Image (cartoon, rainbow, N blue to C red; front, top):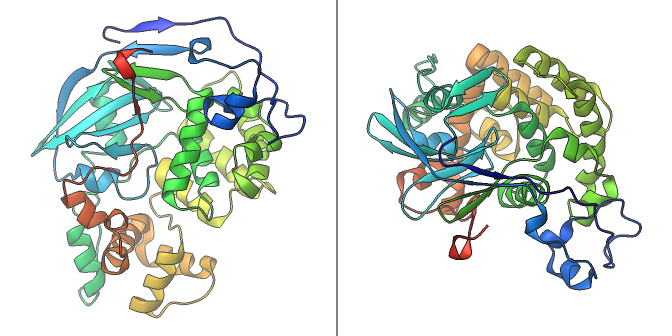
Length: 372
């Protein structure tokens, strides 16, 4: 890492919850997030009790071919990226913070590291970004000539890629996304990262890494309910027990992650049902033939193709139709259909990506005076 300071302080005991939001909570660090908790607690917790890193951006660039950065990062597959007012796309991936900007056939980047550890091995930052964003992997999809909707959608989505997300973070993200709009899911992920992740401060901006498996595995359903995660709270301890069992003390490769997620799909109350499972498959496990079905996909399938039925039936129709790259074809149609029907700019991927509008939510907070 360039110009990095790593500060490790003594671990603290989790404080008792002294507010009225939870009875006999085993762990509570909500004083980081909830002002009413901080006011009620006689033993306030400060950020100085945490692990944090202070970094500077390590700059570089990588070549691009037939790639569109805004379409890729704003398509709806990712929760922890956003575009700032100066046009930089900023986010956190695989435990590091990044800022990215496309300049023609070059990707300009800043990173808080010179190498990134992934399930596929440790890579230099430039190689990681090419792998993570699939910059060299333009999908070769085939579209029947009479299918005017798909032909138009594919043309408008040229340069889009599915990102290789961290399977663990992707799994928790999509469990929390069930029946929740994207903004709320982003807030929940930021809450968990702020509470239990590592703080990375770089040039006046504070990012948070996603908590590791061991940290989330300690938390109870009552704790998640205290954070107002609602009925989804019951799924997280079940999923985390499974994840902790299979990842404790060992590195996990792609094939092993596929086995773990397949086990979660079959595990009662894990939160990994049909849609969540397909999202994890498509966005992190390189199963590019997977098709998640949501309200927009159901409407698109009915309006444009006369396909109605259960989510499983629509999923099967789309996957058989698109074969090994069905996920790409479905994403093209999903984005194009929303472009024609969603009222807000934030919900229209094509229009927002082509604009200079900053994201309504960013994955960092500004640090006053540059302090940690």
